[in-house]
Length: 567
Ligand SMILES: *[C@@H]1O[C@H](CO)[C@@H](O)[C@H](O)[C@H]1NC(C)=O
Ligand SMILES: *[C@@H]1O[C@H](CO)[C@@H](O)[C@H](O)[C@H]1NC(C)=O
Ligand SMILES: *[C@@H]1O[C@H](CO)[C@@H](O)[C@H](O)[C@H]1NC(C)=O
Ligand SMILES: *[C@@H]1O[C@H](CO)[C@@H](O)[C@H](O)[C@H]1NC(C)=O
Image 1 (cartoon, rainbow, N blue to C red):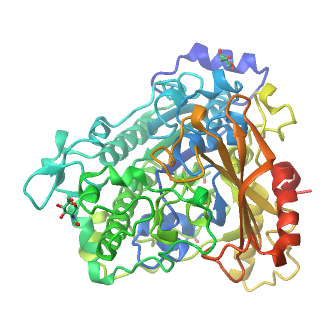
Image 2 (tube, rainbow, N blue to C red):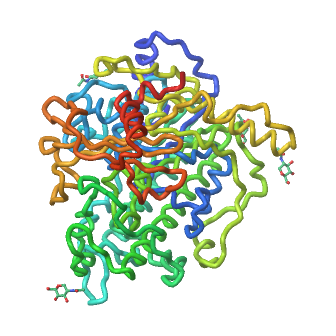
Image 3 (cartoon, rainbow, N blue to C red):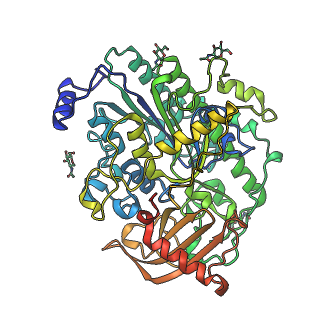
């Protein structure tokens, strides 16, 4: 048996569900990697500036989703949403102030489903958002087989530990460090990845055939940008660009803007006296933020690589489903924005890739490894040539991950939630991506074998035609709690919908006591024509010439996710 799991618990689970499963049959393990505030700034997403060889290599043997979106662009609500496969209007979590089981409904979580099916489930680092959102115990024991591990050095995220030009240490935004001078001589993701390696070694030594669901949540590239300072060398400042659209969009309603208060509280950023609420941030500093974000991504990539290498070393690589996703994006100056807390594509869109052994494997025999010492030595001039694996352009959502993993692992797939979703513990407000994955992998294989794929349907046929996200506001104009209003202060909800050709957002009145939105009380609307305006810089939502389109989009937005499901 895996450490911490009593045999009696295992047996009672089997009896409780009246399920007979063959314990001797080899079942797939799951490695669930979630990365805080990671937008698709990765080599495999054709973001050429960023060096991410380990994640790119995982992508080469996964199905990569090019159009994946979260349901709310802030950690707690987004994580509770994808870990329960319910949307924020169902979990009723828009801030950090409630635990879904007591506040909304006793929804079965993703790890809970695996645990109840005989898996050893374990959480390392930031998986559930810690604190009230997950009952101060990461939803243990319902979700996990033993209490979650948190790296001790995460305690210093608001501490004055960043060396600065004045010779003192401050609570900075930009924080490249000599790790040996840090409290406890380590950093959170170093500790978490080392612990994950130890766990994989334990699993390897374990003679039982019990499969594992191991979740590892990385803290970077979330602010502060605290990482081993060598990573900064990969990104000379002179090679860093500004965002292509570093200005407020035309026709942007005030309610859509987040004044990035979380950056303003940092010592170094505060010294800039950036005008409130719209800035601008000085250009050189914009470049430095981008440089430090990229460095944090490369550092995180190096820690992901250490975990993936151990998975292979321990002999689990051919029998483990690996998923990697970000919990939402991050603005790096696009729309004159910094942070998340918005409804633009740049923050709703995430990296999402799923590796299923046998589905999209490439021959690993001669594959290069990327230990980070080598990456650092290579410098920024060198880029790694890594094969592209299967990719899907289908519009997908973070709530789809739970049913996908259930289907891939051969567990019961949660059915679509009924209208009284609050009363049903086991259901999904997403849809399994397993068949889309199959199709993408198959297509890539056929092409590689020089066979025709012309009879294969497009990914987007028989699939969702829209994906949804939402963000709350306390007021029409930016104020001190605009980024992250408490539930009681929410007065407006911004619902956004991405279709193949448009993004439509409507900001409407919201009652936090009844959790009801009033679509008859509209504060603002935004419509972006993505075919001609992929950066979402020109809001045409108020032009009479687009009134018909706005009305069509509005109808679809109100009809919501159910109507957008594959028919
Ligand atoms: C939720 O359901 C589990 C059983 O699946 C039960 O142990 C737990 O007490 C329930 N929690 C709440 C808050 O109802
Ligand atoms: C910010 O304001 C302070 C106090 O008004 C001033 O001393 C400082 O020079 C200003 N800094 C910048 C970068 O403008
Ligand atoms: C996985 O690889 C190991 C050797 O590393 C082998 O014994 C095992 O049969 C393989 N399993 C599958 C499912 O291919
Ligand atoms: C993988 O590649 C190596 C070296 O090119 C070759 O020897 C081996 O047979 C290949 N394995 C498979 C399963 O194709």
